[in-house]
Image (cartoon, rainbow, N blue to C red):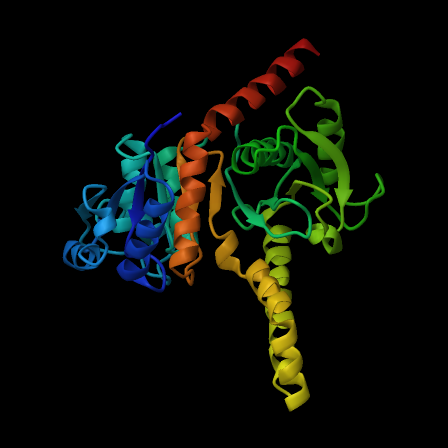
Length: 345
């Protein structure tokens, strides 16, 4: 466990660039006095922003990077520029153990490609997965993976995702034996593809792991708080995530339109404002920002490109939490248990 996590930040990524990333780091620093930062990007622009945040004095270093990855760059192009870009150098710092985790709001495909090439996958992991915390009406958030890193997955991949997602839930949410389900078109055992049914059978047999496999779940139940980890392939997961985000925006837009449609509606809005503010806060993606590439030999967190300063601070908080709780060790221990169980069988 790292007592004082050192976070490498791609200061040039995201819509807000250095202004948003540096202020987000300042907010995260105020929340956690143990954090230290290395900010990668245009040195002049970063230092200008640092001068506005004295709370980071003595806690943030600047490492100049002459280039930045754009949203249009293909992963192959990004890989060729890894040694000169803020994103590539932030990942390299994790590889060299000069930082404990990297945070970027830049191009997701480029970040995944460079992270996988530089850090490599953990022993026993076939493919890394993109996981995120999603809001529910339950007591805790939901861990969902994969959200787009792998469009096609076999049963082995899904079992590995379940192990990694459960370890993430234990680190980020403090749930000792997370409830795990596979996303499917029905909850009956005969529903779904061969890969899903095979993965379910394997997870039922792995009852020695630090998780409780509870079968299948349909997408309309994702926000009900009935499970802690939902596992799927990246194609279905990304569609489900975008649908949830779109539905949240649809609901808030409908409420905004309804409350401004008449004088009576405006009065009603004033009366119900505490409730609507709570709803807005719960649905705000900035409050759940910070997707994680699980299965790599290092912690890499993806912040939403349009995240505000609070969202960036939350993504940094996710990275720090995973470092402090030694996510990699927990995943490795669970994978060792699976291998030992298979060998004994």
